[in-house]
Image 1 (cartoon, one colour):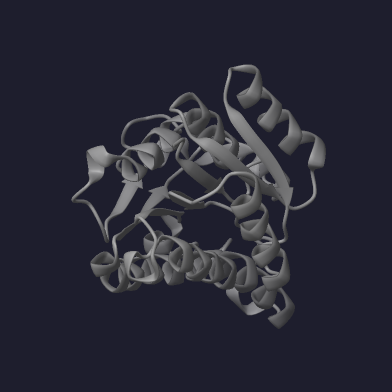
Image 2 (cartoon, helix red, strand yellow):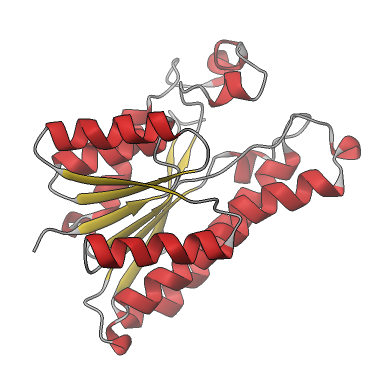
Amino acid sequence: MQPVMIVTGGSQGIGAAVARLAGRRGYAVALTYRGNQAMAEAVAAEIEAAGGRALAIRAEMASEPDILAAFATVDREFGPLRVLVNNAGITGPTAKLDAVTSAILDEVLAVNVRGPFLAIREAARRMATDRGGAGGAIVNVSSRASELGGAGEWVHYAASKGALDTLTIGASRELGPRGIRVNAVNPGLIETDLHARAGLPERVARLTAGVPMGRPGSAEEVAEAVLWLASDAASYVSGAIVPVSGAR
């Protein structure tokens, strides 16, 4: 049976790169998107044009009803889930800590922490061997900001990714005996449009000098790490938080 993968936030950037690579590696890919239907459907169409199976599902990852509906759609259209990639996330606006409002915090934490938590819950209900599932793997896309702290720009974002790292560790220990591996990748400075969408189009160029390898990474390089963690090649890897950061 073709393995099934859900990639949240799969319409662009790292999520799209993960979805495309998963399609090439033989997964049936369900990718969620929040607002850009055309981009999501283009990624799905690219996977299908290469002979794969893909489905674009609109789902707001801060919304429990949307998450439940997305998983139900995958159950109906593709069958048993094998891999969940929690990629969807937002930075929130750049702001110093004393300018961050409760509304900003609520939005960032809802998408970056509550959303992945609920998605992991739904994946566990389907994959856990003590619930009749066949096991599986979960990969959370976190950030090096969880350790670096995001000072002066994104402390709120960094804090949310620190929570996601903690969720990764706790979930791996709880779900390991139930047949589910849980890991995270922590991308560093990656060349995607995230920076421009946050109003900082020059950010990658400005920070590249601080990367020991001397260059930003690509979404495809992060995707390779995600697919490895999802694969049987990483069968004894769980609870790991893997930097993909050029040593930054």
